[in-house]
Length: 118
Image (cartoon, rainbow, N blue to C red; front, side, top):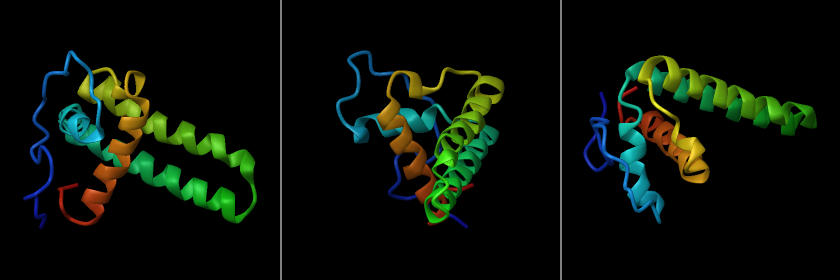
């Protein structure tokens, strides 16, 4: 059971984009979560992010640095599949790449620590 109190946008409610842009991650994160309203999209993100992290760790531990680009491809393949085929929206990565990547990691952390449902 999750304890969603204290997390941003706990129901993944879609939010309009701030036409003035986002200056901080804290401003951006509720919008990011709203762009992941579809459960399959979220699960694809969490799966892709997890596999990408494991691939990065494996690449570093085995000194097989040719795997580093594969980690990026894996993460984006899962995420963009979720956006294009299930959520049917444009990934925030295109406009806010750093905030979006940070959002992937924050959402994963919140799910793993049971602050947010899977």
